[in-house]
Length: 227
Ligand SMILES: *Cc1c(COP(=O)(O)O)cnc(C)c1O
Image 1 (tube, rainbow, N blue to C red):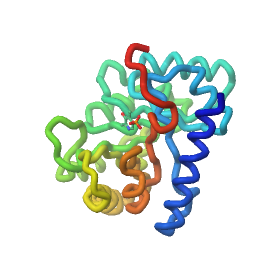
Image 2 (image 1 turned 45 degrees about the horizontal axis):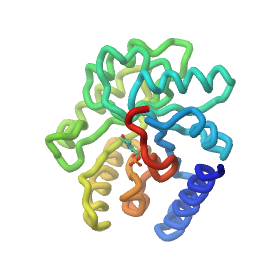
Image 3 (image 1 turned 180 degrees about the horizontal axis):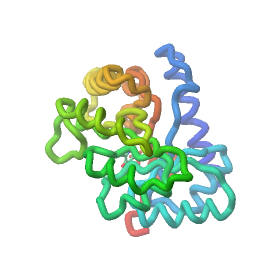
Image 4 (image 1 turned 30 degrees about the vertical axis):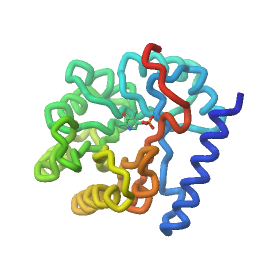
């Protein structure tokens, strides 16, 4: 019954311990509960345990959940972390408070133009293909500065930081190399949000300055892909 609550509690303790180890302030790290392919009852349990930040990757599925909890008067922070199709930008712009996966200017411009004027600026992270993997989304480090500078001109967007999904590798040292490159790139742009770190690389991410850790399976269990 209280499994999700216990998982969240355990993960927060793990984050706190890693923060002590690497001399980080635990309050500087947000645990983002990635709820894609998990149902409303599971999200409700996480909310009851105090969780307020949720990550989703599929728009239609996310809208059902967002509407459900908005109608119940919950004030949650919904983060979109999935691939962005340009015909979906209007709904993305007006239903989420964060978008982590912006990797091209045309998408940023559409989000900027479509964000409703009575909402605060939409928080943006640029997704960086930090290990130059051909199959992965994200802008290259070489093209990052140009994209970031252009996004900073868009008044309805607030460029907060960078997001990356590094290469799946076992060694903490190699994981740290990728995260350090992302941190250096964010520093050079004076951006303070680093959305990096998933269940298999939490330690390396915290060691290198992550401010948003994205965890799904570790909180909610295995995803049901037919749901
Ligand atoms: C699904 C997803 C996660 C969470 O993955 P888990 O393996 O369930 O922890 C994190 N980040 C992104 C971008 C994702 O798409």
